[in-house]
Image 1: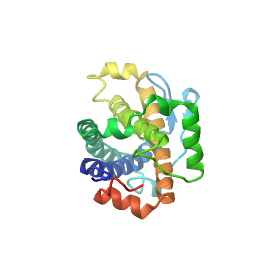
Image 2 (image 1 turned 135 degrees about the vertical axis):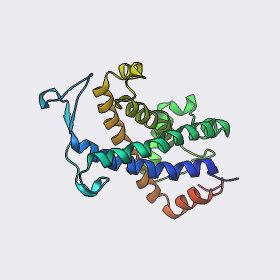
Image 3 (image 1 turned 120 degrees about the vertical axis):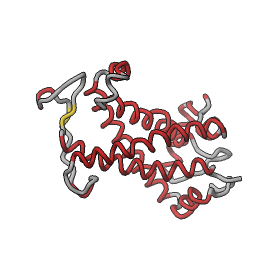
Length: 223
């Protein structure tokens, strides 16, 4: 039996490309106006809760300041990103990947079990026992799939001027258009933080084996 289903592998690589393009084009958009606000509106530094640093051109798409082109890249990539997430959730529910591998049990939320899992990670012991993932992995993947990625979609829709007249209730639910923009920024960097930790753990646990498994599927008995 394959360790990673074909649907998971396809989504993983497509989503990786989408997230990289969205993040880098988003940095260009951020450079256009680096102040973040809460509520429905804001325009001055005195109203901002945070001023985002200016990102260098080598971190952005395109590799120079062009707001219109960055928005084109961002909107174009947002569609496969959102539809891919919908596909992944449908696949996870149909093939029971979510229930079997990501959903946590009550016993896993007990502090002794969590502490033991943390200590194992600190010792670089990635043994999952009988399960595919340990508690910290389940928690991280659950947050990414159930909170971070969906919130990127919802907040992205909320800050679009063309969507606001149709989905005004969603903008209000998020606290206003400027609040949605701030949340969009926060969740984008939360995803970036997850990416860095995920990459570090892949490198520490055997990058060749992990990447090969995500391409070919691997075997279910592989650690």
